Length: 161
Image (tube, rainbow, N blue to C red):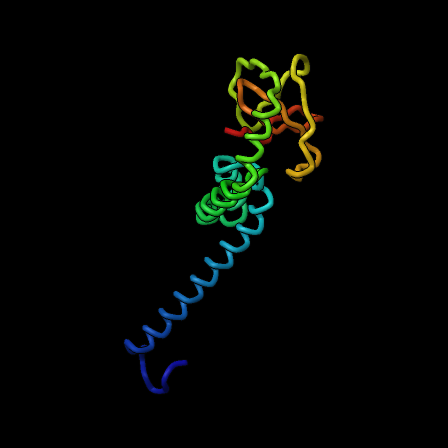
């Protein structure tokens, strides 16, 4: 709204317009962050910090360009770190459980990390006890570390250190 009879906007009008523009940018940023968080939250689950950050940056970049990539990376990393398969509270209990079972360790020459596919032969897979609520996964011991594995693909989904 422009005062009648004035040729240009005065300083007080510039402040109002600038304030409205800043509020609008803030709302868009918050909306973008929420959208990326919702989109990344489920994808980052079980992937840990590195994969959550990578996936969040990719999804955020696809949704909103460079700003979305930055926001997605931060949110994806946080969600991924907090939501590993076992979570913080059950992780140590599962590690202790696997040590107490005294299962033989499979010697693997490659890097043991999330995404590694284990060989078909020589690896013995065990059922995860129901108390850990990880249906559809098995575990095994690789290079003295318990790992959670997808049984069909033999892909490691979490390394317990």
